[in-house]
Image (tube, rainbow, N blue to C red):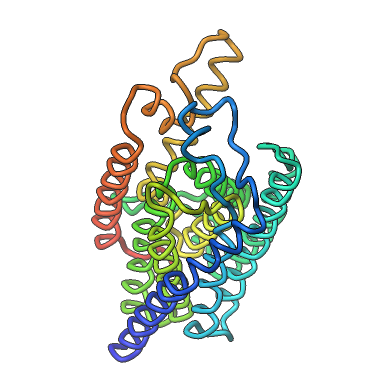
Length: 345
């Protein structure tokens, strides 16, 4: 088992470095290509912060295309391609990436901040999530397959037929939460790194402890590839951003994050390590709900990172503080993980 675990770690390191190098070596040329194609860049919402109309106008989007390419190449090179889990993760990225790409493409060509309707986008997300949820359930035996493990007390809660709808909500919800967080330079990419590092640690710990979970080692390789791609993307996306990931990147990476969470039976801990994503989504839900009832706003602007912008905090300070919180959430999640007995054992 030691050598098996060592092979996984080596594959993770190589996967991480490959993704990182692809991003660093291809990033500048890719940005030039996107600039030549997207003359006016990503449309900026007029209802957003006024500062964005000046600082972000003309910046190209669809950086998610290069991110997905880097992850895909690293996965094909270093993951076990005979594992169904590998192909499920690849399909999730490609389908959600294609959805985001179409949304970005229409925005650019029609010069509008709104392309695909929310209902159509949600229908596509839930349809794909249903297939993923059914596959995830098939990977486990007994009552645990319909259970959620409550962190820190390590008690499985049996949800019966409500479990599959919950998994669908996790995948679609995480996808949209990451999309909402992609509003400041470097924010979403920087938040995704500790989240995927958590699931890299999850799979390495579990595979080293339980021989029957060896196929899940592929999740650690994919997580490492995603970390490398996000880190390389930050080289160009950090303030002031030269390119945005767009819906192409945020929807696909969010869906991938939700998928690896349910594959490893860590749906509950995803809310801990993805704390900022949860807060971003809740701020929008609260804002919309309260405004419809009272015609007043709880936040100056939602998602909540825009609220802090309206308070006068510099964009870089907001991003840095959110990153710090994300790494604290990673450590809190890790504390629960190392004391957790794996439900499938």
